[in-house]
Length: 468
Ligand code: ADQ
Image (cartoon, rainbow, N blue to C red; front, side):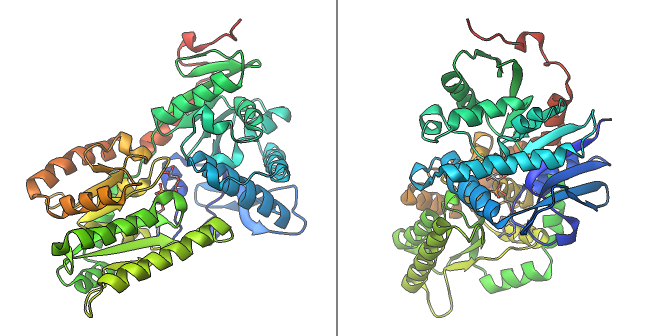
């Protein structure tokens, strides 16, 4: 079996275990065949980074990492990846800050990744690249003569041409993506948007059955929804129900219902509207006062960025306002913490929550929605409230689907969920459970690798010609 080489911006080094808010390491656990190499940034910044990667051996995986310089960290990571690409891919044009020098640094880091990685490659390695930090890596590897199969998976949404056009160098970026053999997305909507961009921005390309040829390269796009280890997480949650932390949480509720939100502290997650909605629930439906508490766990993220600092201040303000307005001497409606919580503890918290509130303004998939479903007690499940703009909503249609921009609609859904009879909760849960068990992390990995391993296109008619 060919060796698998995973490439991602950050590498989950065994030396830095501990709770981390982010789904990649957990989702890829099943793909880590013995002997896998995982390559990426060490998370360190240093004055004179070594051109060669540093190796660290884990149980079945070898981790190879390089450092970034301070300047690369700022321009590549903070400014271009997280300050231009992230907002663009989440439909937030107003937050995009493009500077040419940041784009050049982005290309420079993709090149440096390619150079350090190429030294470690064997002829038959399968290379699987992850996420928007590394759009140019396929092209940079090809430039160095790498002929291996290279796949790319985008964990965020992809935007339609009208938005992508706003990014200077969009055409260059899209052309570079033709260095990959397989390009994967969570949903058909993102795949469709990508192919529309290809059609419109790379002239002369004909697209058919998800594949296209451009400049002598064949690219196959696929839809491959990411998931979780549903059975494993359900078992963890069942055990965690009796953990000390879950018992303490339950005790602190004093018999009241619990609504829970778990996210990275990111403007794409719709936290401001969610808090606003909870305030409206208490204002509009006073019967819920003292009867429900909202626990929001929002792990701090990207704190070096101005837009994230502004978001944090805004959240502090709205939490203060809501609690100031509705708290009583023995009841605080909104509990808000900005730390990371261990997965086992999180599983128990999900299980005791009557409502899972997942309301991103845009989200590639959103694994929290799937974790919440997997963690429920099958005899007395809670209700999932889910944004229609999360990739997960394409599958989890039995959730209460809401428009995350409409705080009143979210408040109404909270009200409906709190009053929902057991029979309806059971019916919705059964349907959601089936979907979550059907799109697991291991199926996600297996599907992507099946396509990546194919030397030829899976169906001959997928070989496409450049339009005359
Ligand atoms: P994220 O934006 O990080 O991922 P998400 O899919 O929700 O979003 O994954 C977050 C993971 O981190 C979950 O497993 C969650 O349990 C965990 N987590 C979040 N906050 C936490 C906290 N405070 N404490 C502990 N754990 C926390 C990106 C995309 C998503 C896509 C994933 C995977 O933005 O749309 O689903 O990649 O492709």
